[in-house]
Structures are given as structure tokens and as C-alpha cells.
Length: 312
Ligand code: FAD
Image 1 (cartoon, rainbow, N blue to C red):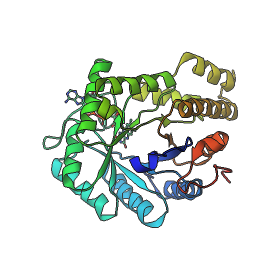
Image 2 (cartoon, protein in one colour; image 1 turned 180 degrees about the vertical axis):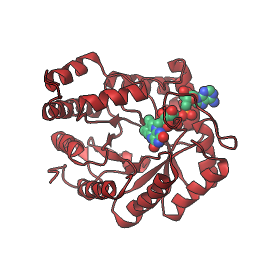
Image 3 (spheres, rainbow, N blue to C red; image 1 turned 135 degrees about the vertical axis):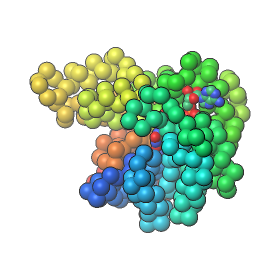
């Protein structure tokens, strides 16, 4: 991943995308339609989130394996410590390795049901993500990424604490981090400065900003509630204006405003030297594709071919 993020003298930056495990057959078909579009657009890598529940987990491992075996994409498997003993975590990593996956995004995960609720370690599991980073690294030649939080993690009492433990994950062997979604680029820049000031060696590791093109005001509000993050007032005002005053929000207008906001953020992040742009897709290609198209020649594709053109 880090090799793909480094572009040498190339001022264009790569992009990558996040998928989520399909819950049923119809959702799986939608995922595969998005996968085929992204194969043409050339992301540096694609990541697959990891959720609770046995059957979804089995499907996640299978689909992530298929991404490795049946597509031109480079998959990164998310892995969380939720409800897993260390033995189970080892066997999950083994299952990924058996399918040719060596890139893992290591996370602690959130309590199932209520992400802001009380965290309970599995009696034979791990407490914090840095322990899982070490465990995965000890199991073989895996390339590990971790999560970072531009506004600070919601359980961190302050930003110094947050920086200390992000740095601990990087020191434990993570090679890069991907941020939580944010909507104020200043928060990302401050995170980058904090890590660099706290530990210059770890601060040199890529911090990849995660971008979510907003397509619905209602869902972004819900998401911000669940993650404890904030939507800056001036952006919320733009979206509220677009939503209009009718009983239902004007989805098309909100979506257009959301694409504008995401594009403006990406332009600024490119100018500020971000190492890449990681898009949450919710398994749809169109919104991310539109942002990429608007960014045009600023984006480097995996094939290092021409700038992204049309989503098709
Ligand atoms: P940790 O790094 O363990 O940190 C959790 C808290 O503990 C922080 O406040 C940290 O500062 C503190 N802390 C860490 N170590 C110590 C210590 N030694 N002593 C005291 N305090 C400490 N969740 C999913 O369920 N599935 C996913 O696929 C998924 N993907 C994600 C992808 C990205 C890019 C991001 C940003 C988040 C993702 N999440 C996912 C959510 C993530 O699991 C939660 O945000 C979780 O609450 C934090 O995980 P972490 O790995 O950062 O935890």
C-alpha cells in the first residue's frame, strides 16, 4: 500500500475505495457492479470493512478473497477485535492469508449495536488495536494499516492522549493510517502536524484521508451521530439550503451539493500534499466516480494511465 501511495516526482495522487460486506445476494450483485466500474478507474487499493455477525463475516472473507483472486484490484481486509479471542483472530488472519491477502487494516472495533456504548474486551481477546497490530505482524509477512482520527477518537480524553496511542499503533508495526471521515480539512492538517511533532519517525508514515461524498442529509446526520464527529456549520447550511423546505429533502440537490463539497475538500487535500484519497462508497461507484472525474488530472490511477474520465 505504501509503495502505491508513494508517487516519486508525480504530483498527482492515488485514490482508493472502501466497500462494505454485502448482507444478501442482491447487495452482493450491487457490490460486484461497483467493483467492475472501479476496476476501470484504477484505485491504488480497495478495502473491505469488517462487521459483527457470523454469516456476514463468512461472506466478507469469501468476497474479499474473490477480490484478490478474480479482479485486478488490491484488497485490504479490515479486521476488528470485537467478540474475538486471540485464537479466533489468528484464524481470521490465516483465512485471509489462505486467500492471498496480506494487507490488513487493524482496528479495535466498536461495541455491537451501540458504537458509543461501553467497550468490553473478549475475555481471551485484546484490549487495544496496538496489541492486534503486534499479533498480526508476528503471524507473518503482513502489511498493516490502522485508523486515525482527525477530531480525536471519541473515547480519547484529549488530543495528546489520542496522538500518543495512534503513535503506539504505528510503532507496533503499522505502516500507514486511514482517517475517520471528516469534513473540515483543518482537522486533518492538525492531526498530521500533531503526529509529526510527537514522533517525527512515525509522523512520516502516510495518513490517508477518508472522504465521504454526501448524498443524503438525513444519513450524514445519522452517521455523524454514530461516530461522534461534526459537520461544520457552513457545510450543514449549504446542505440544508439544498434540501429545501418540503416534507422530504430534495435528494438530487443535496447530492449535487455533497459532490461539490467532496470535490472542494479533495482539491484542498491534494494541494496540501495528502498521500491519497480514500473514498467511502457504500458499494456504489457513481458519486465517487463523479468526484474523481471532477478532480481529473490531479488523480493518479493504479495503471498510471490517463486521468480518470468517465464513470460510464
Ligand atoms: P484503538 O487504537 O484501540 O483506540 C481506541 C481508544 O483507546 C482511543 O481513544 C485510543 O486513544 C485509546 N487507547 C488506545 N490504546 C490505549 C492504551 N494503551 N491505553 C489507554 N488508551 C488507549 N469498525 C468496525 O467495526 N469495522 C470496520 O471495518 C471499521 N473500519 C474502520 C476504518 C477506518 C478508516 C476507521 C477510522 C474506523 C473504522 N472502524 C471500523 C471503527 C473503529 O473500529 C472504531 O472507531 C473504534 O472505536 C476505534 O478503533 P481503533 O482501532 O482506533 O482503536
